[in-house]
Length: 389
Image (cartoon, rainbow, N blue to C red):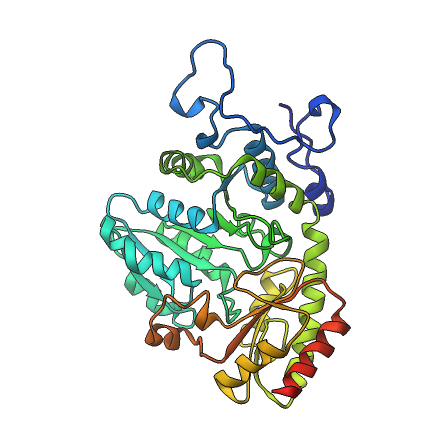
C-alpha cells in the first residue's frame, strides 16, 4: 500500500499517518483484519516475508507501526505484545553473544527484574551507571560492551538523565544507545532525532491513553530493527490485530492528550508543593526538581507523571489513597483518568527493600498519573484528601 506524504504538524501526523492509501473499501478507519491466513501467489522470498500474525506483518501491524514511525521520525516501528516484550526483545537482540550493558541505576521495576534475574543466564553482563557520576561511565566500558540503556524519565521519581550526554558517550565508544521513552511519548521527546539508536515504549500507557489494552512498540532505523524484528518473530511477541486497531485509534489524540496531561500535572505539582503537609514533590516542571534545567532543554513538556511524599510516611500515604475520590488506585499510567499508586506495592514490589531504598522508592511514596480531568477538581480532591489524613 502507498503511504501518505509527511506532514508538518505532529497533530496531523497523529491523525493520518499509517492509514492505508488508497482507503480500504473507502473506510476512513482501517478495519480489523481478524484473520490468520492470507493468500499469496507464488513462493515467498523467505520465512519472514510470509504474511502471518506472529510475524508482525498484518495490515493492522503495518498501520500502527507506520503511525508510530511517523511520530518518532523513524524508518520503522514494530508493535509488540507489551512494553516488556519490547524491552526484553531489544536487550536480548542487541546483547546477543555475551555482550555487556551499561544501564541506568533507576529503572521501572519490570525492567530491573528482567535485567537482574535473566540477563546473566544468557551470558550477558551489565553494570549500573549513575546519572551524577558521568566520569565513572568511561571506566566501566569493556571490549564486549555493546549498549547503553536509559529511561527518558525515571519511574517513579521522574529523574531526567542528561540525554545529550548519553548519546555523545555512546558515539564515543561505538555503543548502541537504547531508551525507554514511555513517560514522555514522541510528543515531548523524539529520541531518534536526538541521536538514540532504538526507542521503546510501553504503548499500554500514553500512546494508547485509554487503559484498555496492553502493547509495546520499538522504533528505529531499518538496519537497527531488522535483527530485533527477526528475534521478536521467533519469540512470538506480536500484538493481536484488535489491540493494533485500538492503539492506532488511541494514537490519533496523543498530542491533544499530552498537552492536557502536562498542564494538569504542572498545576497539581505546584499545589502539592505549596501544601504544608506535603514533604516532597517529584516533578521536573518544578524549579525545585534537581533535573529541571535538563528537562527544559530536552523536552517539549514535562509529562503527566509526578510523585510525592506526605508528612506521616507510609500510613499517611495509605490514608490519602483511601480518601481521594477522583483517581482510581491502580498500577498503570498514561490514561485519560488520574491514577494513584504506591510503587513499593506495585511497580517496584518485585525489588527487595534494600533495592527500593537504593532507588529512592520509599514505602510512603505516592505516584500520580495525572489525567485530563478538570484540574480545579483534581486539586480540590487532593487537598481535601490530604487534609483528612
